[in-house]
Amino acid sequence: MRHLIDIMDLSVEELDEMIAVAKDIIDNPEKYAHKCDGMKLATLFFEPSTRTRLSFEAAMYELGGNVLGFSEAQSSSAAKGESVSDTIRTVGCYADIIAMRHPKEGAPVVGTRRSTVPVINAGDGGHNHPTQTLTDLLTISREKGRLNNLTIGLCGDLKFGRTVHSLISAMSRYDNVKFVLISPEELKVPEYLKEEVIIRNGLECEETTDLEKVMPELDILYMTRVQRERFFNEQDYLRLKDSYILTPEKLETAKEDLSILHPLPRVNEISVEVDDDPRAVYFKQVLNGKFIRMALILKLLNK
Ligand code: NCD
Image (cartoon, rainbow, N blue to C red):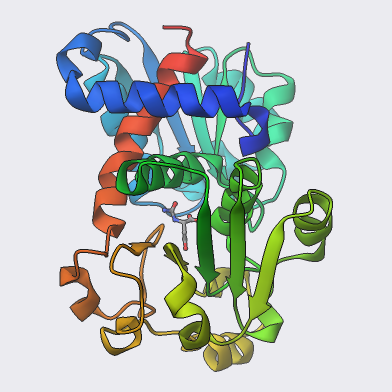
């Protein structure tokens, strides 16, 4: 039985294969409409979500399956003090596969220990978010036609942004990828990631606070929101929240074929005027999230 806790749980070959399956689902949805007939996905969300939970649920419905679950910790027995491990063991009696999101880093790993069904990490605190990364990889592959030979700028809250951490790990395995890390000093990528992924693999990487300076060199610009809920005090959040606001003017020096991604939700870091720019692909990215989660469910259920 396989789980997906960290994007590195999947080999590059498996990533490429899942991207190919997702593209085939897009072209031939009818082929997949009954693959999961009679099966159930449980979505256990101990933290807020719109896209991740609903795309998982839509994905399972489009495969012919059903869904059950909860969308806030308060409405589950977690509110009575039940452990994650017991909750997962219980839900495994009702569902064939589980997608869970939890505010504590590492909670999904704990969940896997006594689980009788595959567990998918749908975000654990400020740590990882592997299924957002699958979404990002499918989006980059569809927009650029490749996952290698890219300069990718990651901008915003690189410290607490779990989607950034998983995306750097995943992209580190493709050839000739250069990272440009754009953040305020206080929100830089965590040291462990820099040491274990970027330095250890000898990856090309530039760190800067200046988005406009690096704009002309980027093939991908991955914007992120400042993660208010992970700050220790509100003053720091208020001081840092408007560090980067992408506007049409700031895009004037960007490449014609830049792709602008954002995992969403957006607060104010991309002005709504940018939405009409053909380079803004964040709502296409939302849709890609459903297709790649279909491919993931099929893989983990051996369908
Ligand atoms: C992200 C998350 O939950 O980490 N959202 C998502 O799943 N698309 C990004 C965020 O909350 O900023």
